[in-house]
Length: 465
Ligand code: UGA
Image 1 (cartoon, rainbow, N blue to C red):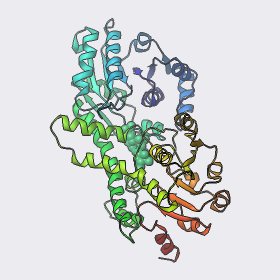
Image 2 (image 1 turned 180 degrees about the vertical axis):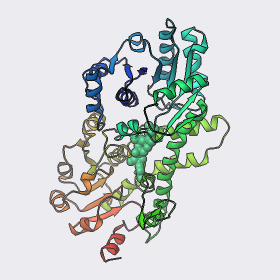
Image 3 (image 1 turned 60 degrees about the vertical axis):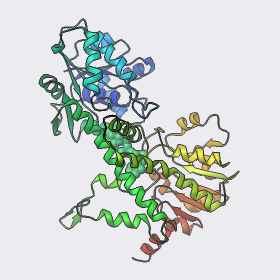
Image 4 (image 1 turned 90 degrees about the vertical axis):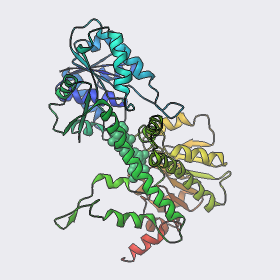
């Protein structure tokens, strides 16, 4: 099919490349000439595994191209995917400006066409937006017989860092067409994919997207709430609690004497909170939307509140252990919102660094991928130095605080780190470090989710528990 993709951001680029890989002819449209040039050169401006080789392949095969000219990009399109950003608005809802503008622009472009085209909304939008906002804008701008322009909500379920794989092998395809023809046309796009397809109403499709992310956020906040509980008791470690909780056969089914550990279980782990471009934003938007329609989103609201408290736990631990952090050099390891990405958006590392600095600390930070963004973020702050390696970040510091669970950090040579530092405190904000190894290197280990720091459990385990 002929596909147009409006918005060459994270979702748009992966969608465009993935659809081209699946045999469609795809043209992306974006106002940003640098992005358009990058796509046409087969290069990715995103840190996303597998994306660049895929782009190179589909661009060289001629199935993907990019343009700044909407009319050129959308000419002859059977389906146009709206993949523009929906950032948080000041009131917690979503900012629909880009969605509105692109809907009207697509509508104007379709004015002179006679071809049946479906406008499919991939951007994450609150229930009712496709029908209530996008459809009228497209139809009005097109000025054509409404029946010749279809509309659908078709949310994405891509995880950063695994987005290419998620797109090419989706776990589900959700299509909410405004009518049967719209749904059928969008379903045609996914004919070459082997995934269960759910055809629902546009509002249900939009709701499914939010409910999916809300569940992940709830699991994380649930774990962090249990973590907070453990922090307030003398001798209970959240890792011990969650480890046994995971053994519930409904979470990890017993099969042929072994255990299956579904990925969802990964979200049942205490830490310093969720971030990224989706979970916090989507949860806030859903809470606001729910209130707006007279529902009472108590659980969603609480998940956000729990999350907001988590970065502070790390700062409190540092203050408690060091007796204050004024003028104290502290290393922060991991700045991206999760490992495998350079994305800093709503990363818990930001409040951790900012609060440390507000208390007078001098922060030496390192991230394997997000260094460049971090330098820009704290460019005006002389108390934050973004370093080029873990070792460099640790030099002369009195404490190391791990915020993002990059595997590199678990593999650090702690004897070497000890030699670089001026202090002996390690705070594990993700419970991914080995307390025994760290203690043996002469450190005091403090993990979140345990009043005693979490060392007792591993000592027990080491003793053959
Ligand atoms: C999330 C969803 O997982 C995708 O299914 C969805 O399509 C996407 O949002 C979206 O709406 O576009 P992503 O933001 O890439 O994907 O991140 P996740 O891997 O789900 O992680 C989200 C956050 O939870 C990260 O900050 C991560 O560090 C945190 N997290 C995860 C925890 O704090 N604890 C955990 O146990 C697991």
